[in-house]
Image 1 (tube, rainbow, N blue to C red):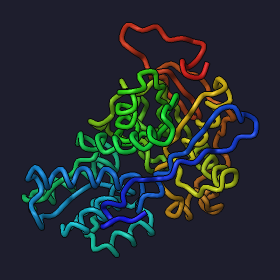
Image 2 (cartoon, one colour; image 1 turned 180 degrees about the vertical axis):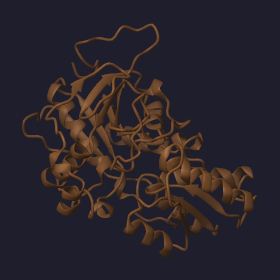
Image 3 (cartoon, rainbow, N blue to C red; image 1 turned 30 degrees about the horizontal axis):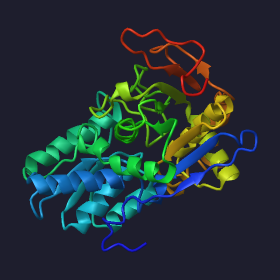
Image 4 (cartoon, one colour; image 1 turned 135 degrees about the vertical axis):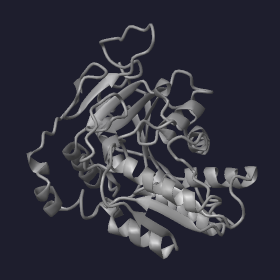
Length: 353
């Protein structure tokens, strides 16, 4: 497949059917967004920066500034630098050495905050970003957590799923900024109104009325702040996994499906396995796999890291416990999202019962 630029090469990612010998009559597919040049957020960076250039919010040669500790930073670096913009990324000490090396190799100025503030690392990064904007008034801030171009970027992902499959019954994705899952679901529901959407979050994330624990180890999903791009109305069911459960599932994904991914994909994989066990024959389930496992080699895939953080002693449930929305969780749990004026069906999700 030939492209005239690295920006044109974004998207067009493979869709791979996963193999589960105990449920061959249920189709489970992985949308390998990790096959983008740097990861799933390449789509968002392209959409946000090109739109800003078209509208005049980003002038030729003006800087781009964003807060990120992972694939959004790399996506902004890819698109921004390819179009001739200085790029400044604000991050925190959790950034892995591989991502940091890539950013610096691409010519990015990286600003690492030294300590948490009122709402954890997220608020510390945003405070530093605001300082940069004061000294660079012409800078463009993509605002990945509230920019409507974030979910709009995933219309291309939805179009690829429709082209490759025609129809999807269940969509599963991790939730961080809310853009990928909500944007893809919204686009798919234009032709598939019965789509059942399942969000995957981290224990200790505040996204769905849970207590915030900024010391959680998972990255790429979860949040201490509520992003503007999170549209709860697009999500039917939410699962929370502990750090151990997410990391163990990521290792299982590599061992069972030969896919070396990050913990966001691992979390999605565990939920896919659960859903397919109770799905009707012929159900078509798709999981979004955001990024590669390379930057997790010293954490998810490190026995020393597991020992240092006591992951082996943490609870690891073989199946989720159903809870009421807002009930605090400590290990794999799920709930159905409440709807105004709607009574929950205690039998389970509409798509898989």
